Each structure stands twice: as C-alpha cells, then as structure tokens.
Image 1 (tube, rainbow, N blue to C red):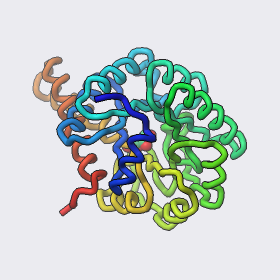
Image 2 (cartoon, rainbow, N blue to C red):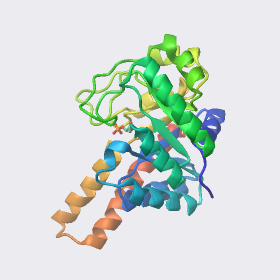
Image 3 (cartoon, helix red, strand yellow):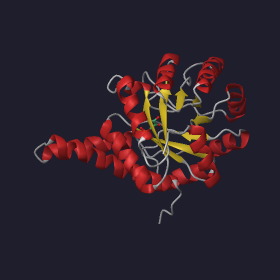
Length: 279
Ligand code: 13P
C-alpha cells in the first residue's frame, strides 16, 4: 500500500462514521508494533511524532524510518508531524515525505495563529500534504513549554478559523489533556457538539490516553475523526523494559517485547475507533 494524506483517511472515516487512530512513535519498535496492529486489523492508521519528541528521536533519523514503514505496509498509512511548533520543522517533515503536518499555534493570539497556519497550508499544498491546526488550548505539554491549562475551543470562531486557514482537520480543546489525567477527564460534549454544528472541518481529539472507550465513541458520534494516542504507547514500551529487566535483561527479547506491547495498545484503540461493539 502507500502513504496517504490525513485528508484522505479522514474522509474515508467520515463516510463510515469512524475515526482514524493517530499513534505517536519514538523508535523503530513503536513503528513496527503500530503498523503490525493496523495490518492485522486491515485498518489504515496515522503514525506521528511531535516536535517536542525530536531531541530524543531526531526527525532526520526517525522520519525516513516512518516513511519507509508506511511504504512497506500492507495498509494505507499517513505519516504525520504532530504539534509542529516552527515553520522550519514543518518544512523539514514535508521534505522528508510526510503526508501531513500539524502546526500548533494554539499559544499564539488568534490572528497570529491564523497567519502562521495559512503559511503552513500554503507550503503543505505544494507537497500535496494535509494540515491540522489547533484552536483553543489542549492541556499538558505536548505543544511545548510548560504544562498548559485547558482553554476550551470557542465554537463561535471555529468556522472563521477553518475557512480562513483552509486546514483539513482541527484539533479541539474540550477538557482533554496530554499525558496522564490526574482525575478521570470529563469532556465537554456540549462544546464538541456546538463546534461540530458550526463548521464542516473534521475534528481531532488529542490527549487520548485515559479517555474511556464509551467517551471515545460518543466523541466520534459527534464529529471526531482523528484520535491521538501517545502516552499509552510510551507506557507500553516502559512496561516492556521493566519486565525485561525483571527477567534478567536481554536486548533482542526487549526489542520484540516493546513492539508487542505497542501492538496490543494500538490494536485495542483501533477496535474502539472502528466503532466495534464494546460489549
Ligand atoms: P496522550 O499522550 O494523552 O495519549 O495524547 C496524545 C496526543 O494528543 C498527542 O498529540
């Protein structure tokens, strides 16, 4: 199969009333585990890496690996830059063959966010790639800097933002946050419904780790077409490493176990996002 754009995968998910899973990766084992799950489920996925993860997984090294894994997969895969913070990083990802990029201008003021996002849409179009942007502020610190307090997306400006920027998907802030939730998250479905009713652009849910299967499916019924999962997959790798250490430590067993644990996590989420019956 081949590398496909976010726009393509989202429009297929939309026709089927499902969401596409977007799984963060940080090393080869995470990439292999995620793709194996997608192939087994015969479901396209998104593999992604956020700019804040690049100090430990440099884009020039992991990017080509992500692209190669997508090209060699038996299902369609979108290779996405998650939370791009700088225009230059977006440019580098596009040059490496990423089929989608996110520009996270959520901490900028509204007009600055619009302006920078427009610039990213312009260059992404030259590469035939899709663009995701964020309106409002998702909690946690995937978007760089210190952990942010959540600022809900304002439904009254969502349509203006999407139309003026021309983005293919919009990340919403509805009480969701990156990382581990301190208490079970209570997502504002009323705000999600208002955003969904006010604009035609497909919506993205960040901060997937810790959200219940029921809530995921409720969000999907209300316009979410892409769901991001990062922490749960990173935790899966840590679990593999701890078990391996407890078992005496063997590199090759560790490498296999890391991929296996990520595969289990990704597969579990694909089933939910495919709207499989939870009973
Ligand atoms: P989690 O780390 O909560 O799974 O969030 C993932 C995410 O939204 C990445 O952008």
